[in-house]
Length: 271
Image (cartoon, rainbow, N blue to C red; front, side, top):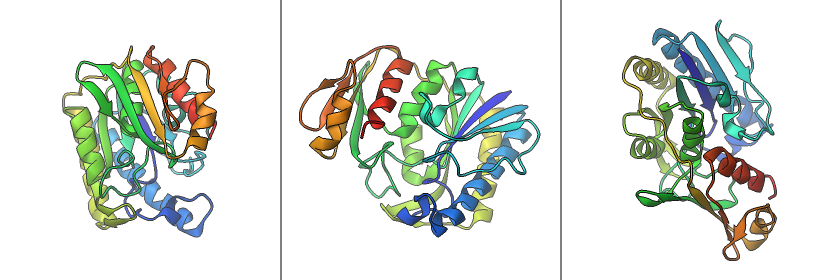
């Protein structure tokens, strides 16, 4: 079984403050250890669940938070950034299941730790054109649809309790593990790593030994993206095919989802 893991930092065990996710700080150096601890626990669970090939995408910021040192046999790391698929770089190679580890809730979620959607400048992302109408989504939704466009279901997610609720609402049957309880944007109740790592390992194993959820199919849907200030909207509004709806909002037209997502990523690079 081939497993793809996209791992972020904000939703890792022990992380709840802005300084911990800011590249290069002493707090970030310590948080990298929390991130690796969560990854190691998930890798153990995947291997126990029957995975024989695992690709890990370092999906936080510049993609330089993790080291290949100590990775088990059959596990490889995608580091760095700048690819069209961003946090999902490498998923296009084809996988049986996708895991999202250390993720956080979408921008604007109440009492969600370090919640945002790709950039702090983005206040809202809405996918439009589905059978249920408009749906506000975060990084988990955007990226799960990328996995689905590549034929892979989201099988596992971890982060705070608000991220877990978001994942379960979006993907019925997903295995989701809360490693903290969000109390405010920069406050959380943080269990010790022994407890969270045991839960992550067991959850990862269950995700691969039980029935997999259905992969998301968002081909033919469009996106509406809202920014916090008009000047943050100026660059993205100039992307080919993008329509500016008002001072702070753009629409990305419906197409196959990988095209919609690539346009979204290009827009984020223009802020």
